Structure formats: C-alpha cells, structure tokens
Image (cartoon, rainbow, N blue to C red; front, top):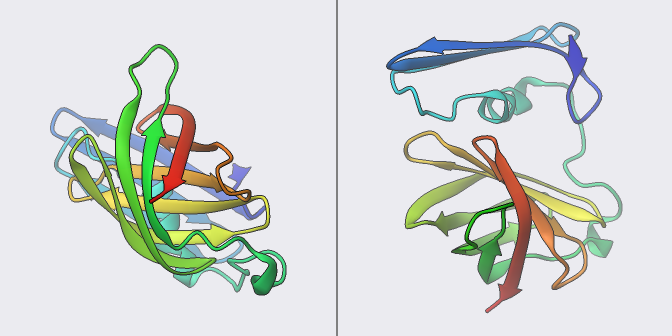
Length: 166
C-alpha cells in the first residue's frame, strides 16, 4: 500500500507474460478499482494510464493549484528536446490548447504521435499526460517559468525536457 500524488491511499500490482501485460490499481478509501489489460507485451498500460482512467471517479480535487489567473499559460506550439542520461537527445513537438489544468493537444517524439489525455497545473509546473496509439504513456512536466527546463518520463526512462515556444 502506498499513496498517489494527491495523497490518496492506493494498492497496485502489475503482471504479464509474453504477449500480454496487466495492471491493477485500487483506491480503497474511494471504492475505485481500475484494471488494465493489453495483448501487447510493450504496451504502457501501467500506473499512469490506470490513474488517468480513475481520475473522473475519484473525489473532487482541484486540477489547478492557486488562482487560475496567476498560473502560467502554456497553450501554443513548441519545439522540444528530451535529454536522458547516456542517450542522444530526442527532438519532438508539442501542441497545447485550452487553459491551465485543462489542456488538450498532441505530442510527437521519434515520429510517434501521442494524444494529451490529462493535465494539471500549479505555479511551479504543469503536468501533461499523453498516450500513444500503442498505449505508451508520456509524462511531461513543464516548468512554470517560460524557457526553464522541465522533466519527462516514459517506459522507465526519464530526463530533462527543454521546450521553446514557436
């Protein structure tokens, strides 16, 4: 048992075999259970996807922290570079529309498109969760200050994210 990013108690378990993968996420205090199954060993159907599915069923929590008027507006088009230890930098693009805490859009890295399915915002960072058509999950944390480096993670890899508005 542990807690999620909002402090809710969670229980989770993953498993799989050749050709399939599963993930179970339980919120015992909220009565919410999410099970993901995929018939593709490399599918990113783990914690982040299950949590994004559970979000609408959990008790109300603000997706923005602070006065929405004071939050940085990240809507727009970006050219991004993802850095990871010991790997060549990867170039990508990010398009966001909407308002802080309620963005939608697309992300493309390595010619692989992903759709933004969740966002949350504070003065310090905006979190973007995007999913590819093969089920891989990409987490982006955009820094509150324009031009400041952010972070990214996907499939057990992570690193610094640098995005410039185009």
